[in-house]
Amino acid sequence: MTKQELRNLYKQKREDLAAAEMGKMQDLILIRFQQLPLPYLHYLHTYLPMEVQKEVNTLPLMEYLKFSNPGLQVVVPKTNLANGTMRHFIYDENTVLVPGSSHILEPENGPLVAPEDIDMVLTPLLAFDIKGNRVGYGKGFYDRFLAQCREDVIIAGLSFFEAEPEIEDSNETDVPLTYCITPQKVYEF
Image (cartoon, rainbow, N blue to C red):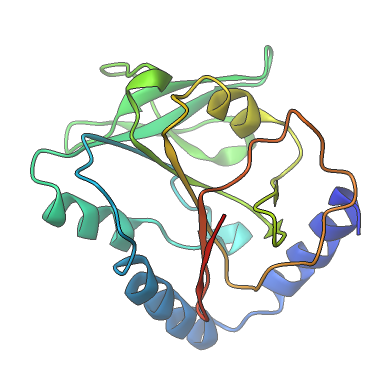
């Protein structure tokens, strides 16, 4: 299937998920995530989940990583729709979140972090394939950002659903995942 076909399909699949089912899958994703062989992390970049989109909640994963990596700095994005870029801000108890583009909560301001300083990225996705290609929301923010990160950055996708055999229109600007964690398994690419 193409990216657009997968976007439509997986938006509907998410919409059809019941809250109780999502809660169970969320717990299984956390358990599988805790099995990843991760190095010590200094900077974790994560999206803040949109409940309306029924995205995998990153907050339990973030708390687990903060516990297992004392001193971990969490970083969240702020998008600029005009030029298609993201800036990356420290996210802590002092961060003020405001609705940004597409009503996503974003940091109002704060200390900036350069993409090359980030050790791990929890990236949003709608679908992914067995090669580690992902389908996002179609704006290209994350592919542009991930291309600026170090080669050894760990890119982890989170999905309630299993891998597709192939995303037909993947291309060379798509940055593949390192892992994708689902309720059923951890995919390593």
